[in-house]
Image (cartoon, rainbow, N blue to C red; front, side):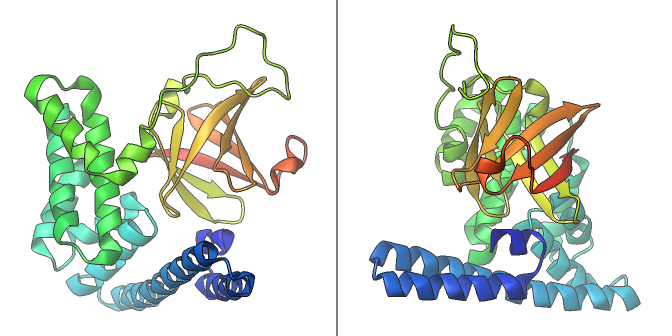
Length: 287
C-alpha cells in the first residue's frame, strides 16, 4: 500500500487498504482493526483529494490563471504529498490570499533564524484553523521552520520556539532522544552502531526512485528521519561503512552521499541487504 501511494497509484492503494482491513477484522484484534480502519480511511481521503487535484491540474492546462485550481493543486501537493517546492508555486497563485502570502514567504525561504521562526508561527496558526486533512501538513511545515531556526536562537526567542515545538507531536517525535554514544569497539558489518548523523544530511530531501516514485524525508541532525508522506519516524545507524535508514517496517535503505546528492538503495524485505536492492533512487536537497 505504501509503495502504491508513493507511486500515486491510489486505486491500488485503496484495494490493498480494504484487503488489509478485511484481514484485520478476521483476526478479531481490536487494536489492529482500529489501526487498519484509520489507515483505510486515510487512503480513501487521499484518493479523493488526488481525483480533485488531477481535475484541477487539467483545468490549469487550458486556464493557467485559474486561482481556484491552483489552490486545489497546491494543497494536495503540500499537505497530501509533502511536495512543498512544487506545491508552494501553486499556493502562491491560489485563491486563498492569506495562504498565498504565507506560501510566498515560505517559497522565498529568507536567510535568518528570526524569519524562519516567523514562518513557523505562520504555519502553526494556519494549522489551528485548517481542515482536518490539512492540519498535519501545516504542523509539519511549522515544525520544519522552527527546527531550522532553533540552533541559532537565544533568550526569549529560543524559549518561545521550544515551547511551540512541544505543542507539535510530529516535532516531538523527531527530537526524541540523543543517539547512543559510539562504541569503543570497531564496528563489524553485522553489528550496527549509532553515530551522530552526517551534518550534510540535515534538512529536507526529495527522493526519486528509478520508477518515478517520490518520497520526502526530513533529517533532524540527531539520527531521526521523518517520512513526510506516511508521517513515520525512522532512525539512522552505521553498519560498518554503510549508513542505514530503518522505519521499523521490515524494510531498509542504505544512503550514500556522492557529489552533494544522496544515492539510496531500498531493500524490501530488509533481509535482501546488502547485495540485492529492490529499488534504487537519488535524493536532492529540498526547501
